[in-house]
Image 1 (tube, rainbow, N blue to C red):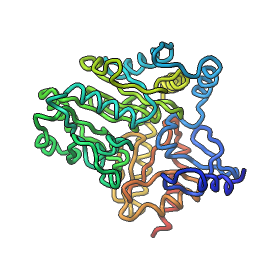
Image 2: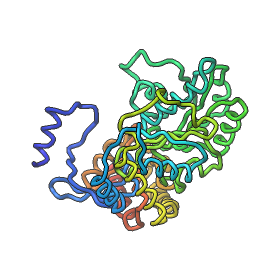
Image 3: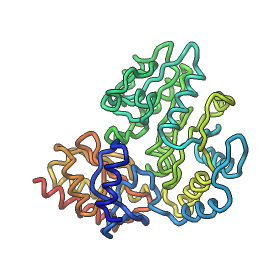
Length: 393
């Protein structure tokens, strides 16, 4: 089928829940994707950071192929080796506790919210979240999300969420009440414009939560799995959360989410209180174990740090050259370029010239290449972005 026919099928049969562009992708490898006409694109925002170690990584492809011939799905009433091994691997790379497996970031955050409510009820059931945050598309997670645009039209929203300004300790302290059971936020806000939580803020929030027996939930659906130069972004600050949520890059392109609960609350959700049909399937766990293997084998955490420094340097060179760049910010390979103008045209022109990035908050270019990225590929992306920015002058 040609691209026109494929787009026609979407128009006729697929719900229009996404802002789409007339690009039909046919295949991907590493840092590149190709459309149905054979045009090659440099992907610096691979599936909302899902393909964190690149498209169709050989370790992930092999693991999925091998596992698909043995066992694809099994009920969570039974055991299988992959889920046990993956839970062990996640705990080994994070903190002592236990893991609940699901299929997406929204599901991981739903599990975290339910776990916190179960831990605190009946006396405590309020969760404090942050402005500009994003936690998912379910009713509970859009309520936790600190952006009104995602909530419009879905009222009445669930009760029990309070939103405060990000990186403002005073605002958080004032919001804490006898009903507060948890504080939930992203250590690096993605959809919110790539805003990094200050290290002192993180330490102070951890201290506050510990003193008041409040759970600290860190949403690392986008920042996890090496994107910020550590396996998880919170590890850059030296603190440890009570609950960690993961998804996106966890499966290397295959759907999987995880909620990690610290040892003191690991058994809060007892049999029958939560579950999911497909969570932690043999296929998903095989893919995720392959991601961990690739990150370690190819020293991708170090690469994320080194290439992150280089990417930031090259973007700051563009900032000196183009006055419409207000700020370059982020952590390793999770970078936001804030503009003084609307970013939609820039995004669209980059796409036309073969560079895939993202625009969020109206004027922030979100640049998050796979953590396998090389200097030559960064240079290629910068050259395209430079030309597009010059067109805006």
